[in-house]
Structure formats: C-alpha cells, structure tokens
Image (tube, one colour):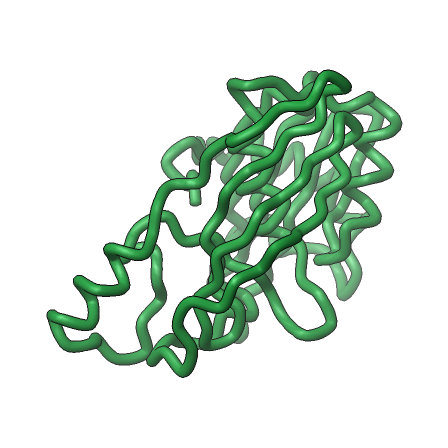
Length: 204
C-alpha cells in the first residue's frame, strides 16, 4: 500500500502513546518493552495520526490500527463504522490530491463478511502463493493499471477505476466516493479466477 510513508516512533513516544491508546484495545494492553508503533499523517483526516501498533514477540503477533488525536482515539475494527463516524465528525477533507490515498486506506482496513478486497496496481502487488509462469505473470500484469480518477461530479463525488483481488480472483471495478467518504463499488468485472495467490484476509 503506502507503508513507506510510515515513521517508526522512538521508545519514549511509543510508551506515552501506549498509555493512552492501550486501554482502548480489546484483548488487553501491549507490553511496552516489545511494542512497536509506526505512524503517519493523512491529509484527509487533519489533526489525526494513523498508528500501526504491533508486538511481534507474541505468537500470533498482536496488531492494532488506530486513528489518534490527543482527545480522541478510534480503534479500527475491520468494519466501515469507525471510519464513517470520523468522516462525519471532522468532516473528512477529500480532494484531487488525496482521494486515491483515501481509497487505498479504506480498502486496506475494511473486511466484509466474505473477505477483503485488496487493491492491486501492478503485478508485484499480488501476494502469490506460488509464482506463476512468466507468460502468465506478464499476461496478468498487462491487465492491471494504477487506480485513477475518471470522473468528478459537481457535488464533489469521485469515480475511480480500480483493480482488486477478492479471494483468488482478479476484478476490475469502478468506485464511487461521496464527499462524506462513503465508498461504493459498482460495475465489477471478473478478469481472472482461480489464481495461485495466498490468503488475502489480513494482507496489508
């Protein structure tokens, strides 16, 4: 996704933030000696930081995702509810420069009852279970394209073209994103099915 935008926080700041966000985590707080926090800012959520909180010493590793401001802590739970609540409260600020990042963020941290839609913009984004033959890899790569805006309505609604992996299949789809951040997929087209890819349930 956009992991390169994350900054790893130093130990004093990590411990300070854990004191604030840890009590909000279901399943117990994190061990401050082993926890790692990666942080980044989103322009569509002014005043908030996105925190990736992890403890890789545990088996399985602990992982939580948080939208944080000093007086507001929102723990993401793989549903769209906490995102939409924050969108309305701020309200969210979407524009031509950040709408793609918002779509990437939304699909990365939302999981439906049937699984996740994982954005793929080039063949290297695919989490292969086993490497396909060179010809097949090249053919699939030719079907992919970076997510892009193809229309913006007068009311600020964006329409994007997007390529997605769902379970073991590749789809092309269109995405409508309202000015309040409401996301809707439409015109889904199955491109390739039965692909040799790993479980996408928690892939980031």
